[in-house]
Image (cartoon, rainbow, N blue to C red; front, side):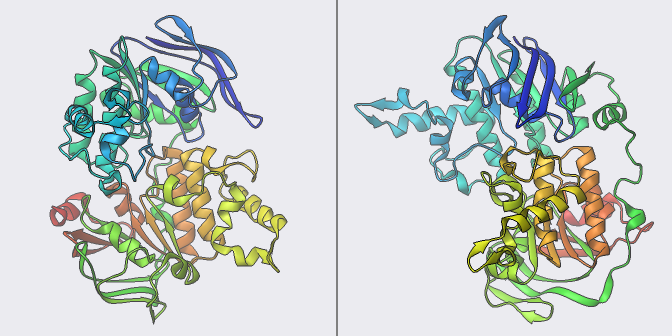
Length: 501
């Protein structure tokens, strides 16, 4: 159905895709894996027409094509579900689903909203999402928005001849197990109408869903294999070019925190409808993990500490001083850094370069008489690019064009270079490959060793257990149980789960 032959792509002199050959057959589900920066996102964007390749050929049903835009690709039945989502938050669900394709609902220059809503319900039914199509998209959960994103792509069925090619870029990264199973069942049910390209860093999901797997490293396809019977450890080794360190979470580097130095306290804090009587203490060098199911109330705690939400009652203290002004600017001034779940929306400023992103929280240090010291900003960025091995052509590179793992490193460098003593990590490894995750784990250990207090919402329970000194289990907005997580004496998954559900 779709083929790439000897495709090349360069960005600012960096050779991102190097003679890539890629094929997807009728009704096939093809997995695509590789480290962050391997070229997966660029390859997907070339297929979808979001970027144009420099050399090589794209073929649809054997016919050469040249997509100049995503709209061109959609006209040929190629749709994409983005990892970071492409929905417009202040539009309704139905407006997002039919964005750019409103013509069937327009008569005499006016949109028939009832007709659009009925059509949107048919698309939402495909992903088994029972919501009002007239609701504003920003009011949905991340998981609901991801399913709307898929429904938007499936709407291509009614607009094109022939079968679809649907690109799934990390579609399961923040979905619950039930939602993942729903997504997979929808994908399998659609094989008679569509072929799928599935990108995920969860290799067990790649093996379970795919027919064949392409492994990409440094812009080159290093292997193509049948998914049935594929060995996950062998795939990991091909991705990173080395064996994965068995000491994955760096537990050997977990040093005791300072019990006498309290950085942060929440004292009987209540957050309207989201948190009830929350009390916790964070010490210098401590990694405190908040665990719970989706919607348990973990995220509102982080957003309250960072000043994005104001508690209804209770007290928040930073280094013993009560906080009265709740705003991100005030929190940053108090040495609090926040790495959000949706890094492209809240973590980085796309369109700004690497050094501009890194110095955003500390502009006063680089401004003299109202004039920015750009040389000093660049020096700082180069230092942290080296420290964190950020793969980037130069400090002038647009952060929006970096891979997910390198964007995350820029966000972490932003807070570390500004001297933040308290860092809030909301799913810091979401969407990262196994090598980039190892880098983030090492950074967490480094921060802890330097006395930084960290509150962590992890991607998995294993991650929370492996990285933390202390775990608080949260259910229905309340802390139900505390666990100490000393090396060699970590709680089990069952210990946590029995208090989560």
